[in-house]
Length: 458
Image (cartoon, rainbow, N blue to C red; front, side, top):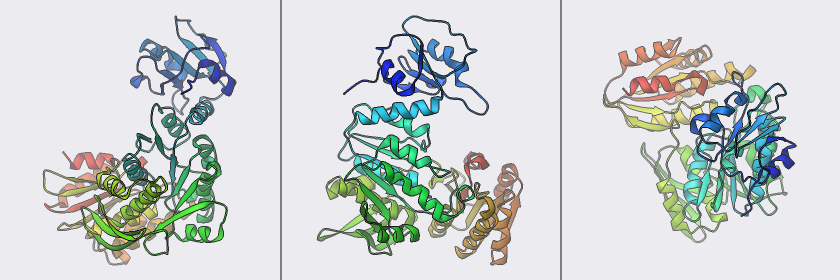
């Protein structure tokens, strides 16, 4: 395996070597001085409230052997022995170029996952399946943006496969990510309403999601949820890509049949060659049937034996804060789904809550963000889903979420509480919650609903 050296970074980034050895090997990269290990390369990114260049000395003191920093003509650097400093115009652009170079060194399956809903859980279950055959690296958590995804690629060592998640807020973002990752398989879970405030329409969201295919390798595969209306139409009309489809309602390569849902798992059958295989997913809810069908599609493309695919699905573990079911010592159950939220994921989570065992179903819902002019309409649609799923108690937090409460009330939900902040919501929940209740907690990440989960789990 080729090694990336300082001279390679200088060449691809147009950077300047302030001091150090051009032949130095660059193997491990870190953005956080708190997590620096001996021999790491520190990359100093610039944020709204900080500039990574200010921490370069701390990184070197903790054992970093080099730093890649944004150009700053006013900064004077103290030379140290055996270390290097590279300055570039933009560390974000630089990390993408370095990751692209690293990716070119590996002839391995690279599976990229995008979609409006279910990216992380689909990535997790695909990883579990692919790991049955290959030593596999995956995106940790949701490090799916223009910094997180390249840093994932830069962790490659002796892995034989890579599963990356790709997120976007605007047109053009997936084009950049897929150009770096060059996937051999691209999975699109669905096209919903996430970021519709930035993109203006679901058709534009489809256009943005399809950018993932621009980097697809020759003879690569697009794995598509054929039950999604816009993706279904796209598959029918296109003939450029090798496609593998999955679904429940639409004729697809892999179709879930005889579905049995419970609050702890999902079971279904799927036709594989001449056999009807029974699949068990260790998480309840229809959403995870779709996720597992995507994993089956990927596993089959990679010629993973069916018994190994089934084993991978049965062993899969969900990332925290995504439908993470926790039983509290007080006797009630919490569904922690507070990492992010949009209409499609709210709908799916409410359907999951409705199917859960429990005396009463309580939904604690907060604002969904980045919806722009569609915000009122989509929050009202969530209100309809609350009533449709017979949720016993609704608690909302935030200005936009009041529209959920308003429409839920109009559609028959009787017990509703509107809270101004998380502290009020915690107090209200503690007043009304009873043993054997099940509580869904969900909002956009910046609503900090993790505070509610932590307070209820004490």
